[in-house]
Image (cartoon, rainbow, N blue to C red):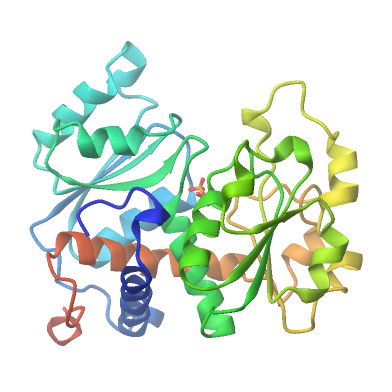
Length: 316
Ligand code: CP
C-alpha cells in the first residue's frame, strides 16, 4: 500500500490483510505483554495535524512508537501556519527532516490527495481526516471492532445514524463495509445528507425506529455543530428526539447488537449517557482498536512488506 487516502482504495483482499494484521498487532501487544516491536526502527512518521484531534493523533503516535518509529508531532496551532505558511511549504519543511510517512488531517477535503500526488514529498501519505470527505483509518478501526464482535461482516446489518453531511466517517464506513460485504443503512434527516448519497452503496432512510430492530450494530455519528451554519435544521432538541439513541430506542435493538460512536460524543444529543456507558457500547474499545489498526497500516505501508509476520519473534 503506497498511500491510504480513501476507503475506496482498498480491495476486499487489502482491507482483510489490514484487519488480519491488526489482529496480529493486538495479539502481540494486548495487555503490553510485548511493549514494542522493532519493525519500523529507523523510520520517521510525521503527524501533520491542521485540525484538532484527540483519538486519531494520539493513537497514530502510540502506534508508530510501538513499532519503534521516530515520531514528529506537528500541530498547526503554534506553528508557522499561523504566519501564513502554506501546506506545500509545511510539507517540504517536514520532508526535509526525512519523513518516511506523513499522517495528515486537514479541514480541506482533498488535502491528503494533494500531498500524495503533488510531487512535493516522496513519503507515504495517510489520510487522518480531510474536511467532510474521508477518514479511512476510522472506518478500518470500526470494521475491526465490528469483526471482533460479529465475526465475518458479510450480510451483517450496520445502521449508521446522524450527520452524514458534515462528517467524513460515514462515507469511509459505507465504502469499506460494502467492500467487506455488510449491508449498511444510513439514517439521517434530509438536511444532513450530502448530494449524491443515492449513489453510495447503502440504503438511506429518515426513519430510525424502523431501522433499529434489524441491526447487528448501530453507529451514532457526532453532530458537527462547528461545521454548521445557522440554517441547521432540525433544532438540537428536535434532532435528539428524532435521531438520538436513548434507552427506549436502545431497547428496540436485538439483544446482542452493539453500539459504536467514533467520538467525540455529544452526550445527550445523538446518544444518551446511559446508552454510551452501556456494556453493549464498544466506544472505548474502538479507541483501543484504533492503535492496533494504525499499527497495521503503518507496518504494511512503511515496512515495505504486505505479507509475513509482524515481527513478534524479534520483539524487544
Ligand atoms: N474519531 C476521531 O477522529 O476522533 P478525533 O477527532 O479525536 O481524532
